[in-house]
Image (tube, rainbow, N blue to C red; front, top):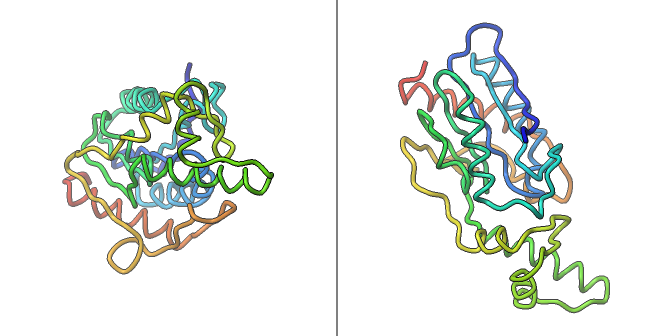
Length: 222
């Protein structure tokens, strides 16, 4: 089953295609508006920018409970295989957990995070929500429950396979790779994935596009 894909083209022949790999789960919603602004900025610099939906996310018709990290990796690799010309993968946060099977000329990652860290954050949100609702849960009890049935975490129903894979998943080595964070030594901007609601940072989007374009030139893609 094919998934929805947002594509923004430059005015002329693209220098290369930037495959945007969004953050995972609710972080993707919080960052999406800024990612689209970054895609427009990349198009203004002569790049085609592509942002695919992952199975079970956004407009996908697949149930998230039927998905795991392995399926996301396969889906992303399949999307990349259909792209002609030089390809650069730009991954954000947990997106770095699923980008290594793509055949690309280069990779760029912003604030990559391990799967165990993402999972703990989701589970802590569930524990807090249960407490407010007068229910008792803990990280340990949620881990046990996730071994045999899908687990609802922050609005995401995750399969036992997804939970198990997240618990041990780390971003894999790829090259050439530029990995950047936020702040003085990285991208100017705010960690929008920490906000309670989706936000927008146009300055951050422009900085992302500029850094990816500079990395592209460093890798000999012009």
